[in-house]
Length: 418
Ligand code: HDL
Ligand code: ZN
Image (tube, rainbow, N blue to C red; front, side, top):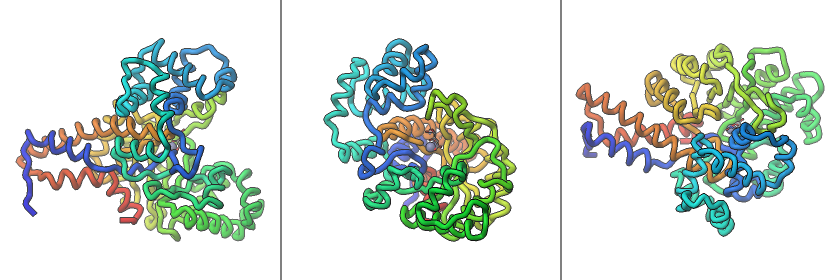
């Protein structure tokens, strides 16, 4: 095949085309295919009621939290819009994201007319809207966050045939099992798993059966859990025992990775509900221990604290069964995406997964990927120009290959589905 050598002047165009034209696999989201019904959030009120914006709104407000939560979604959205967009300039990443999305749908943000925007979403049909969002965002696949302990989600898997859209893949989320065993144990018993109060071989075996059942039912690409900053392993705790005797063997048995999302300090402000979680620096030694102790198990890891990012890159240099992914949650802002991604490119080359959206509202795919694509494209151009400055002749095919790896290829190979 003819190699298209590119020189420095052409690099920006080739990278821009490759980054904007490569369809993305979004490896961690909280959105659902249409057949999950109300679990799929979409539209302007859901965009404005996103918990990131609620936290930012309440900073300006002396409204009692209960009074805010007592309002309808529509009233909450009105209050968020007034507070963050009209009374103050919407420059935060979450605010600007709403405007990027509205603009991408062809709506005129200069009118600031919320009724106009609502009218657009009101006339959308969910199936068409999913197609429109995936097209606009340049996303071809998303991985959901699927919780067998969420009773409304269980019902879709058990009696409505589960996911019906090939663009949506499942990840088996285990917070309910690992972080609250005392609640999970009686539920497992109720669901027919013969677990006991104490941790016996029988209990371990039945939990492994539960995991295998759900991995198979969901055709889960990986298992995942979010963990506190003080996460320790090995540890003589419910979580430590379940990880060692159940989750890690199940990952090995099913041949799928286990994703650790480390550093969430849950509900530092209970009144903010979903918006009430914070962040803490975690112990990289745990990540290194897991990767060293279980070389035949693959671990995907993202850490919530900025202070953990460099040591996570170094850990990834030591362990090929460790895949670093995303600029998660409080790190998903341009300034930090740039800092963290540069660190990763310079320490890991192309061997990581730069981003996931974490979208909770379908429409967020549009802005989260638009904002990240711009940052990643600028960075890649700069690195290819640095290569060209050494006399290295990069080709267009190689640039497209690299972008394809970053936007999905690395993930699909790590989950061994391609
Ligand atoms: O645990 C997680 O998957 C986090 O992403 C939380 O859902 C968090 O609330 C969030 O939405 N972050 O973006
Ligand atoms: Zn998430």
